[in-house]
Image (tube, rainbow, N blue to C red):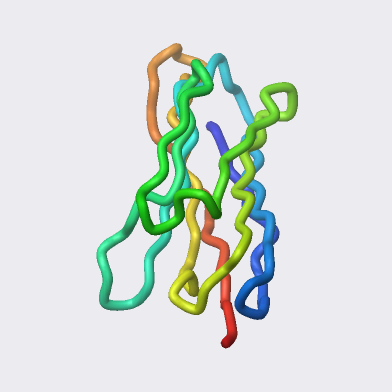
Length: 120
């Protein structure tokens, strides 16, 4: 079973920076993509950053130029680098990894969530 552990959330003032991490462990044969989502109460989940196996990245306009999604393949870890944070970035952030486990078939795995609070 593939497991994801998130860390790095917390409190920060507007204009500040945070770095979230998501480490995958377990029987992992390969990873197809790594994605960060965020969700606040009463809202639909929003994709905020994605990176595929080729290294191609994707960001919505709301975070483009402020967020990046680097990865460390040797550690099976993906990061969310957040700068110039705004109050509206206050959300719970979840990582999702598409990975092939012991049977060689791909499935999606979720982290436990990482709360980010940005004050004025």
